[in-house]
Image: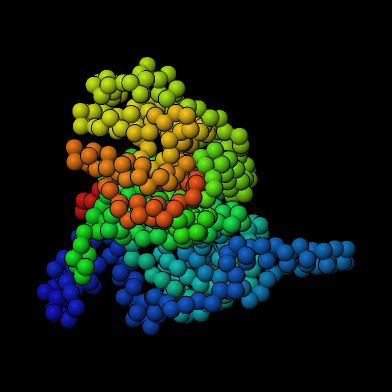
Length: 542
């Protein structure tokens, strides 16, 4: 295939031309055209603009720390010497990073480079780098990845710096990163103000967001530590981490609308899981009496500050336990993880200080509902519930089932008032098709939700293990589906068969990992703690 603009052979056309003509086109922003010109000049000079590897001796933070250690040792060794000793240097350091700032002084230049959690100044001198290095200096841009080798020293202004004896281009960037302004606070902290003007662009181009915003990188480092600590905590208590199917022939374990697909070879409809629950409880039947899974679930639902169609859940189940045992496990685990990762159980979230230390308050679901609505959830008619839902702003109240109305009203009128973590327990049995009836009160379920800062963090049950009761509950859900409730469950005959083999008394729960990260990092939108959240289709590109 030939490019109609330059005539060169090309494997494909990008907007009707080859990639070289595409980058050089006046339709591209000038910084992109300028960088592509520099790329061509680099290749003319014989410089490979996209390196294969670079053998670092230190990460940037390590190089900084190693120099300060060498400097302290040198000061101690020369203390009291007649000549006062010489300035310390750390020789033979090889570091790499992205260029964050560049100040050209003619015969030399100072730049800052950054890696995942460090930042270091480098000093480039033309007479030290030679003709090739000097030519390379003229073709660098902010955002380029470079590697340098040299000695670390402290400048007269007191900044730790690498005196570059060699300079290597590792990656030439063709699009300028949206670097923002920086300022140094009174306590010495470096504050970066984002160059992104549009929040949706930050989510969509998370790679650029991470590159220019250290505080965003820190959120996801904390997220990784939270997940690691959850695993460590459960592993230490005899829980076995397992993996259950994401692609399922029949979805279940929650009240939600699924995503569906088609398996061509098997010629059957399949679903992305909405919960891990039913497979994990099958494992309890199989004598794996303490299991957990941290994985992605998918629900074909709306998007708001606490909901993303793809999200991460921790689900765990353990035999011979009930929902009271799960309450104790929950408050202990969340408090321990917070202390281990963040060093405290007290946090400020959306202007409110909360404390995750046990014990947490316990509140009956029906009492909280009645207090907020003036209605008895056991006796309230659908018309009364619908009328109240309309008052809260639910335009679709006429389409909601009774269960959906109860859940909606509780979410709107009760959850938003709760700040410190609360166990809300004893949900109506009709809302809880997988939970055991409450002892002595069969209209209610042995179920709880943890509500904190206005949203649900955990949902848990004493798990229903009576196969005949479970089949009847599924059948009732099936009738709701046939009546138009797209979130109701289907009858899962295989799961009922598993229960017939015997599920011991079991307690289980699901914890929203994304929401726990929101809580511990003070982020008020789930999109801030999911690396690549679901967004509307992008309209145009530059």
